[in-house]
Length: 104
Image (cartoon, rainbow, N blue to C red; front, side, top):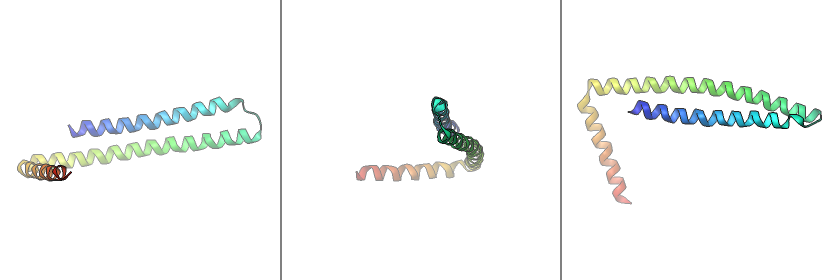
């Protein structure tokens, strides 16, 4: 279950960033009819930064996915090896959340 929700959150984040990249590319294309050296220079700078952002985003996605999978594997292993400890921890966290919710 945790694996699905983490993957869903990651997919939503990636979709948002990809939409941002697409919108920026569209903006670049829409400004293509502007004239002058400054406009050309501006478009080139935006294009370079867009390429850098895309590469950085792909690297970040890979890193986040790897760390998330490692953390999930560690938690799953712990729960399988010590199920009663996991139940106790979950009960304690639930109790704390319940106490904090009652204070409001």
